[in-house]
Length: 165
Image 1 (cartoon, rainbow, N blue to C red):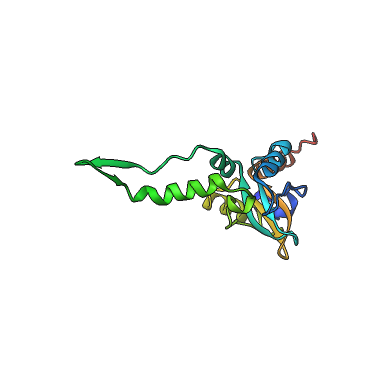
Image 2: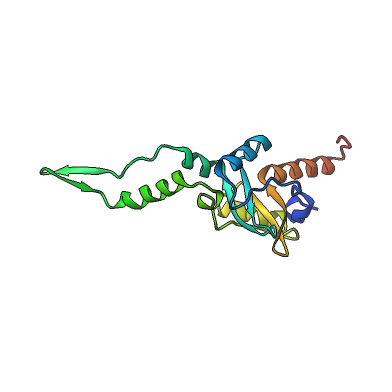
């Protein structure tokens, strides 16, 4: 069977580091660092995926906020309007005290019966390096690019007749 035709359940990781929406940023950051991962699904009490938190979200939260760009024209100071929303978004993330304030709240997910090809397409189309795997509304695993590459390598070994594990 080609790797792309395998069901996600055959290559996903079932031991998933998760964070809670009401968890503090400091606790979430420690959980990601301790697990050696750069992102984690955000799950509620019922294990439903309500978001994804990445180290990129946390870096923005920890970054210094830069004020809006202002220009001086004939002695008057004018704020460039295009910078206001970006400044407000960065400021909200910088002062966010809990995960729900900085997470991506529109997570892309897949199901355990979806094919690896489908998951790969979702990752590519959404510029994601991993997808939470959801079954019946609950998190059951995660599939990352590394899982797909591992499956491809193992499939190549099987096809060549090698018995090395």
